[in-house]
Amino acid sequence: GAVVSQHPSWVICKSGTSVKIECRSLDFQATTMFWYRQFPKQSLMLMATSNEGSKATYEQGVEKDKFLINHASLTLSTLTVTSAHPEDSSFYICSASGLGAWGNQPQHFGDGTRLSIL
Amino acid sequence: AQTVTQSQPEMSVQEAETVTLSCTYDTSENNYYLFWYKQPPSRQMILVIRQEAYKQQNATENRFSVNFQKAAKSFSLKISDSQLGDTAMYFCAFQQGGSEKLVFGKGTKLTVNP
Image (cartoon, rainbow over all chains, first blue to last red; front, top):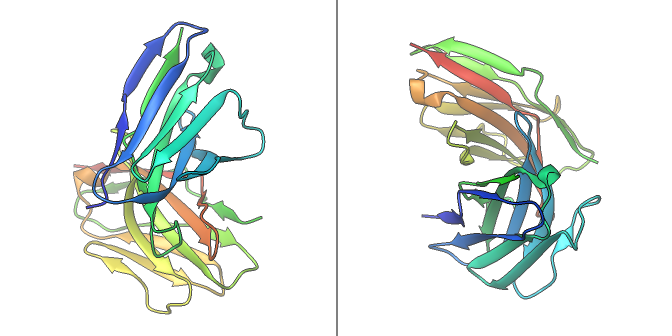
């Protein structure tokens, strides 16, 4: 149980294009989803928290207009990297939690998306 | 703000042996949760074990167990009978009670040698 699917797993695109990453909870309803960024050999950095039907809460230093997050349903959240540039290249990971992300409802992670901007 | 410290960037262990990964954290709160996540080369984050701070009993999951020392703010992970598939990055994480956010340590790269 508690499977989170993230798509695509790897994307390469030209500078200036927009890229959408999907995060789906397959067997549970995710009231809260999280988006992380991970640089090589580093830990996960939380970018934003999204709750179904409401605006995402971004961490300090994360550009809201650059990283658009939509959590339209209890099973789907999307991250769109707008006008991507080489510095946006990174590994992006989503996680989801059901019925609130409290400690008794641990986060379950997707497989991640490797984004490469040329 | 809470911080999580993993003082061992890399560790190695022989197959079938036991290894302990260290984690300390800093908080003034009394209600919180602690986690160990595993990230193998495939990059997927996998929950290994979790501990509620209000529970004195150390959590165990098969070959994985923790040594939770609340007063010392220490949360180490012991892996018994290490297997080659245990090779991965291991992240310790803290979650304050009432908060949805996880605070991760920098990770420990564990290599299990045949």
